Image (tube, rainbow, N blue to C red; front, side, top):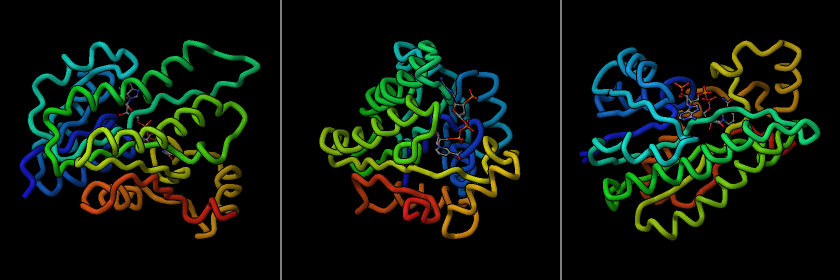
Length: 233
Ligand SMILES: NC(=O)c1ccc[n+]([C@@H]2O[C@H](COP(=O)([O-])OP(=O)(O)OC[C@H]3O[C@@H](n4cnc5c(N)ncnc54)[C@H](OP(=O)(O)O)[C@@H]3O)[C@@H](O)[C@H]2O)c1
């Protein structure tokens, strides 16, 4: 029987918010976070139920412990936040790269460190990576690298945090997510043509995969691609 909350870091919009909504709809206590307290409060209100918002910047990891000080016991911790960094090496933007690397690798880890005493033995952690890990594109060096880092983090965290479970989810482009819903038709068609299921994966399918990784007590140390078979092509 669940007695802790579901914390979704990066839960104010996009995939994190969709997952937060699913748990809120089942009357779970949920915390959603984003960079800004006002936006986090507004997202929590829109989601409804027992949801509250917290604002903090993952790229400022020293501030994280104070921001999460009054979060109680946690059953599921989801790390979904992203600041996208399309950053070609030829025109390298150091600040942008530093923010993404800090956010995903140090910020995520500091959230886990902070909440660890509140994560019981049967709790679980889910970290978002992405398929830029395996399918780079010009400008993806930082994104590809941090997603590779997520893959490795899962392995170390499984060992360090046992018996708590840790998994990662690596989506392909999620066609109906806010980030991609308005992409040009030509680009969408090119992606669909390379996806064996003949369409892009959906937010609902990502939520289903997240819940499998979070809730199935045997699933641990998995880096799961959710890509409609894209990696087979
Ligand atoms: N969407 C896709 O198709 C796709 C594909 C592959 C991988 N992914 C991965 O899936 C995850 C979710 O993606 P998404 O598209 O749903 O993201 P999104 O819609 O861009 O939402 C990003 C979330 O992260 C928060 N955030 C951004 N920067 C932050 C910071 N510095 N500190 C704290 N919070 C911060 C945002 O909050 P505020 O804006 O309120 O500050 C928001 O809640 C990401 O890790 C992404 O890499 C997504």
